[in-house]
Image (cartoon, rainbow, N blue to C red):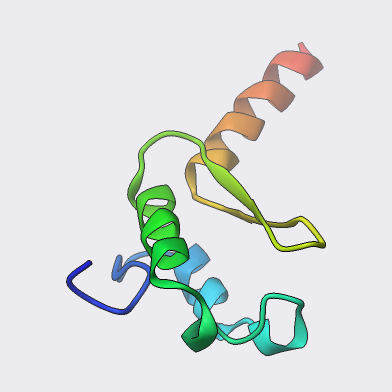
Length: 81
C-alpha cells in the first residue's frame, strides 16, 4: 500500500467518520497499532464499488463501505412495496 492511510477518498463522509472515531476506546485499539494487512483489507473494502463490510476483533466490530448504504436502501425500498 502506497500510504499508511486506509484510503484517501477525499469525498467520503464515511471515511471522515472512520478517521475521527476514537478507535482506542474499542478492543481494536488505535489505527496506528493495526497490522498492515488489516489496513490493506480495509482499503480494498472502502474503495470497492460493491457493498462490503468486515467484522474485526473479539467484539465483531463491523466496518463497512458506502456501498452498504445503497444495498440496504434497495432492500428497504423493496420491503415497503
